[in-house]
Amino acid sequence: MAFIKYLVAIFATAVPATLANPDCSPTGAGTCTLTIWGDKAMESIANPPWFPILRDRMDWKHAVISNNACEDISGDVKPYQGYAMDSQLPYTVVFERLSPYGNYNSFRFCYAGSCYDGGAACEIRSQTGDYWETNYCRRAFDC
Image (tube, rainbow, N blue to C red):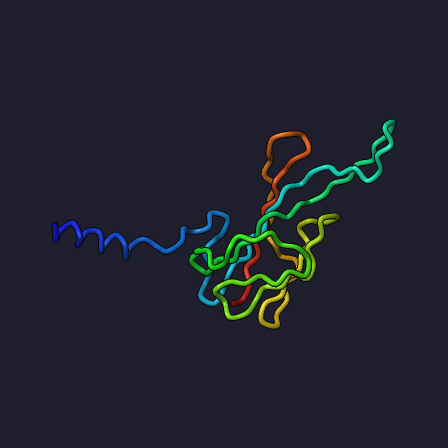
């Protein structure tokens, strides 16, 4: 019985508290990653029955902060422009620009007095239906 307790103790300390984020690439010390993703859909901006006018809209649904080992250090939140995101970091990440329209890959956030605008690695992953796609973006930042 003591041997089993010993094995459990070894495995319990060897397993990380959170699983690594698969949408993150490990970085160096002092660098974290913000990953955001959402679904793109067509939205009707005028709805006369004979001629609907549609435009793309990005519904940002998730944001996660990961440390340099890609372990999640924040909760999974629904981001929006102006949102201050809490995490295990000493300061919040503030979304200064996160538009549902236009260039979805162009977003801006700030952390600890530094702002990050552009430079995000984004990719579209298709989802069911002709008008639904999932856009994943990640951006490393000094933390």
